[in-house]
Image (cartoon, rainbow, N blue to C red; front, side, top):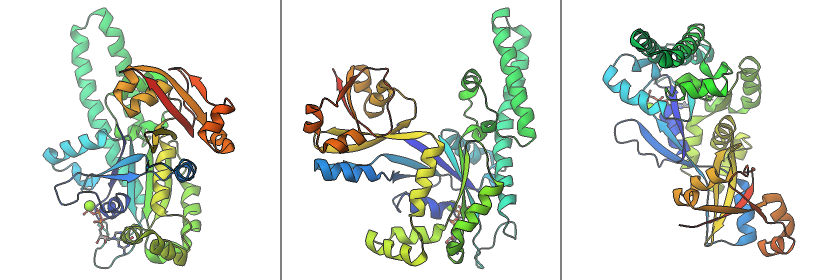
Length: 363
Ligand SMILES: Nc1nc2c(ncn2[C@@H]2O[C@H](COP(=O)(O)OP(=O)(O)OP(=O)(O)O)[C@@H](O)[C@H]2O)c(=O)[nH]1
Ligand SMILES: [Mg+2]
């Protein structure tokens, strides 16, 4: 099960451009929306591991992006399409809101002017309205159920009613669910609704080529007035990034240097999504392949095994673990063995970022 990120935003903000760049043009954008594309998670340690171990293949972790192919603002209008599309969005682990900051005479901004703050607010409102819709329908149902409810059911219905009412009141005051600091129990109660405003949100301000030299100051300015829980904001020139994906790596690097861009904007988007989701990487070395995997921080070895294969989770015996740093110090796996640095860990071991893991399991 890979991590999925849904791309939202107003019409003509550059959603598809950024999606294509992220999926290196390999997303299927011909068929009807939504489109799903896969991006490889940048992980410099993979290359270092490969240099040490000379594997047949290196396999980076993947993250999938969904371009819903519509503006969230338009979704409210056509119920039939929007139902399916929003459903797709509700399955996402996080959202990216693409906000337009580039000028393009031939494709005017749908609101007639550029205004990043206004557009962020518009999309936030649309996402909140979707959540409010779900809550209202559920509250009506609870109301009906309460009439005939037995005492045992009553308690939990009342609790849910109280929680949902509080969430709704907050949404009506423009406070998204992600900012409510819900308890673990409360989060579990509402998990099934897959509320859109509960998801981590990365705002990608899509700037024009002429703004690239000012990236640092633009981002500092945006960050100074947009600092929220489980949310982040960065700038990216979608058009340039998409054009760079058409070139080979060296040529693209040359262009970046020319524009004064130190790091690929797409790598930054992926890394930022990673951070927002609290993801870490671990590595496996099996039959000549070095692979990177991503899991949520705090997950145990059993969960990590399940990420690779359900058989591994079911037949889990133990995990042999060495940290990336220890392995680097030893220079090879056999040297690490000699030094006794490979630890045997059980199901409950909390996997750490950079762990190199071999799972022992029976099928
Ligand atoms: N100049 C400039 N044009 C851009 C940039 N990003 C996107 N565009 C152009 O803006 C137009 C809309 O971009 P799309 O990526 O299709 O936007 P979208 O949000 O997917 O649009 P819809 O799906 O129709 O809502 C395209 O013609 C792009 O080439 C940019 O950074 N600079
Ligand atoms: Mg599009």
